[in-house]
Image (cartoon, rainbow, N blue to C red; front, top):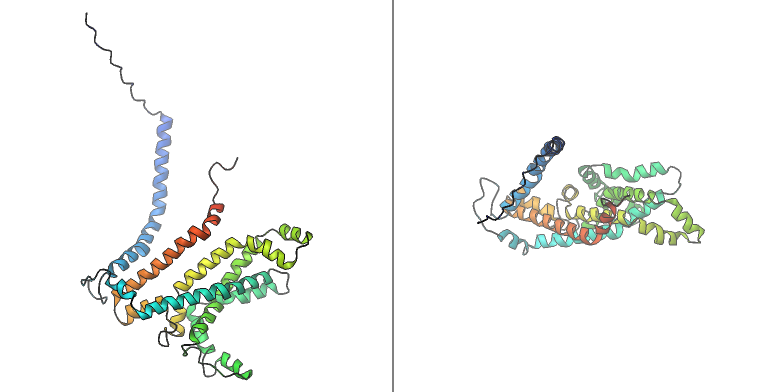
Amino acid sequence: MTTESAQPLAAPARRPTQSEALQSRRRSNKRLTILLFLLPALLLFAGLVLLPMALGVYTSLFKWNGFGAPSNFIGLGNFARLLEDPVFLGDLKRGLVLVLLSVVVQLPVALGLALLLNQRLRFRGLYRLIFFAPYVLSEVITGILFTMVLSPTGGLVNRLFEGLGLPGQTWLSDPDSVLLALFFVTSWKYFGFHMILYLAGRQEIPTDLTEAAMMDGAGTWQIFRNVTLPLLGPTIRISVFLSIIGAIQLFDIVWVLTGGGPIHASETMAVTMFQYGFRRYEVGYASAISVAIFLISLVFALFYQRFVLRRDLEGAVTKVGALP
């Protein structure tokens, strides 16, 4: 008698219970709700950020005057022109000078003022308000104000020089002094912002640490170097990052004060981009400059986050399951 091999029967698919189906429906509804709340922000971000960026990259590949549809495709010709343009290469050098001055001069002054105003001083709140007030002013108002202050005829600075028996200067029309004058104005405008950052960071340091160091016989400088400065590290790193990015993208104060002159001595990459795009109608080349500014900022931001901000960000993230 022949016997057929027994074939295992497939188990019937288990139907989800009513409770599981209800949980699945709730998860789907939750995802849909989150998507609906995020959709307006995503549309705005795509329309106001991603789309202009894509158009900028697209038009940078054309020789285009801004009128009609771009048709004269030149590929990377505008970017090759950047590497040979003495004005743009000068912009890079001037931007580097402003970055170095900001890190070496502006930020230490802001840190010193923050530590001073953290002490128990009379009218401390008023001093904080006075030092922070310039940051509240718009860049255009600041530029107009210092156009008068640095005026060679009757300006406040030249009057002070004359009172001290020193000759007046043509601060904004002398190629040798205009960049320093520009740095002075931007420092006056932004150092209050960094001072508030440092002040907030200093107030987050527990007083128990400094009191313990004093009890161990540490002096003021030792406390600053071994306690205050290391604990202010994350705040200082964020401040340096914001200062450098701001120097790379500097435009409005420069435009109001000097327009980039004299003979490009105070011109920045953003001013050069504006000049080519809206004065000379070389929109394709201006778009290439804007892409270069974006790439420089992006590379610096990624590098800085990778090698400087990484431990701060990792320390700020609490892993799931780390807490009992």
